Image (cartoon, rainbow, N blue to C red; front, side, top):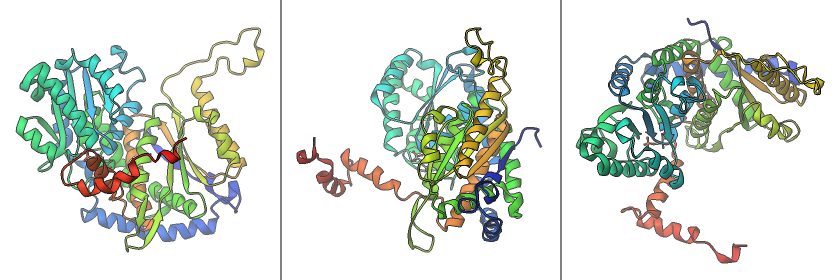
Length: 469
Ligand code: PA5
């Protein structure tokens, strides 16, 4: 077991701290334990039956080796790595990079052990055009990792088609072949067909693992390995957390307690779940969590087919930044939120605040103090203020942010999501409501087979001038 760990602190959601109107009473906690315990067993059984293959990603030997071999092959001649993907094919890559590499990674070559990393998870023409202008004379030193299970996602496909043409124009067919790595389904789909046709280097999106559960597969590991992240340590952290979240003793299982607390507050009028990291490094873990939570738990039907329209709304906030933009609402607005702070104990970088000038004695309390002490004091201060307003607060404590603890965090939240799905009685692994938007895009873009849908959309997508002011 590594020295640095993450732990979940949940006393500040209890009635002992915020009173019985808003806090969880001992009786309610006992009832939650009784309801959740059989579901821990169920989730463990499903896992053993192979129904949740994301659970086994920390133990795969072949994928990490393949990823590391490919990174070793490409790294020496790669100054820029560009990920083209969206949703589950991008958010994990971004989160790992922000968490595990320095803030100035892309700008300062002395601070990075690998290429610069750019993740394009949108199709804004201004953004992409600006980047392509910059990169077009560096294409032979740039690897494009296009990630799409299906290959049909309009955003990723359009980015890829732009890049493909650029590579063909500038470097020819060999350039396309040399500069692109495709991460896609092992056997089928549009991107697989293109990759096989061109002879692209390929990595696999594992069978049965949805995008939002795929960060510990080649989807997230390749960019991490290229950029110097110790992917073995990441997977070890996840495997360590697997032991903890498989524990059938509710009170020893952080995922079970996390899921149960979230479930309780959703059912007691707190339908918004705010995640508030107090560290820049882990801010994008909150973005990754937002997708995991929203797509997995927001469902119209339960597993029996009843209409339920369930799902907590995940919100991300950043400490201390959002103390100055959100906390007024969080304290005095409706008491409809559960807060989860992410706190780092050891920032591993000390920055001491300078002395106060003589004309500003009121700043002396800051002088000579480590900046991380101020940051964590502000976290405690904000939490205290919220508790005074009877707002429930969880904290995930990171002893330090490193590949091991980030692996633990990812796995903790993935299994929390599985258990929350079981508590809500919904299927956390599908996302049927995303399809209509995708299909409507196809229809609006004139894709063959979507003509009838295009006709249905037309009256709604044309502006009615009577309502335009
Ligand atoms: O979590 C998910 O399943 C989604 O966010 C997908 O990752 C996203 O829609 C991209 O899909 P694809 O990998 O097919 O391009």
